[in-house]
Length: 153
Image 1 (cartoon, helix red, strand yellow):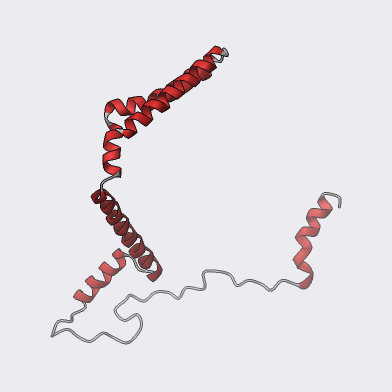
Image 2 (image 1 turned 90 degrees about the horizontal axis):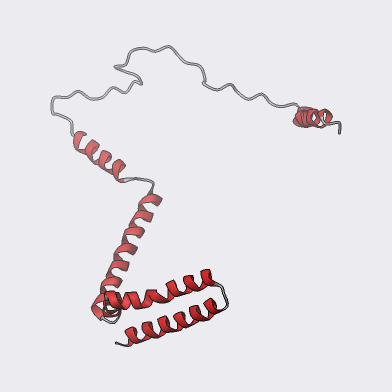
């Protein structure tokens, strides 16, 4: 009841300001103020104000919001811990599957200790990147000097 009265008073004051603005021949601004002034009355007539005030003053609703906040906090905390540990759910799932599949059958042979056993021989590949050459002491600024000379400096 109090909320509806306040909304009606705000709308009446807004419409009064819109009338004064229209009297000063600022019709576009007056129309905009009138539109804003009609919103509280529209909310009262549709029942939104009654619904919102019913939610705002019920302790069970606030307990529900508190529980939602705790759930969100727990979710975000677990996500942060998961990211800090460096593992994702997919990695843990793959590790569990590997542990289950790691059980060796009784008649299986032991794994070979030589690297590359059971693989086809491959040609030795050289290093993928060229080793960086040590720069001479005077070469550090040669490209800068070239740019400065190009511009006449």
